[in-house]
Each structure stands twice: as C-alpha cells, then as structure tokens.
Length: 74
Image (cartoon, rainbow, N blue to C red; front, side, top):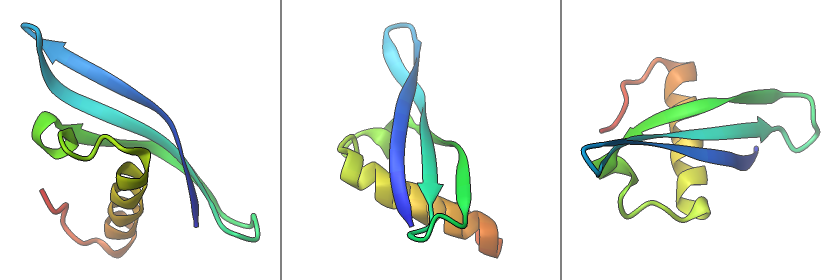
C-alpha cells in the first residue's frame, strides 16, 4: 500500500499541543483499493513521530488494526 500524508491538523489547548489528526490516503500498488481518512493521535503519540515516514507507518498499523479488529496500541 502506498500512503500519502495529506495534512496534519493540530489542536492546542492553553498553548500546548493537545492532539493531532493525521489525514491520509492509501492506495494499493495496482490502484484497486483506496482508503482515506484520518488517524487521531494524542500529543504524546505524535511527539517523536513527526516525520512523514514515521506517520506513514502509524497510519498503516492503525488501518490494519481497524481491519482486523485489533485494539489501538497507545
């Protein structure tokens, strides 16, 4: 699957990062499957994972967890 990070929506409270939504689009290599949406992350989950390559991995894992019914690994 090819993952594109479309944007990061940050939510602040009293000047501190509270949470983010990582908006994404996933496409199968052959183009037959398309998935898009957002993954909500807490400030703690986002900090240290700001690079797009790391966010792509988080997106892939969360989508897989949703498909298989696995709990979110926070």
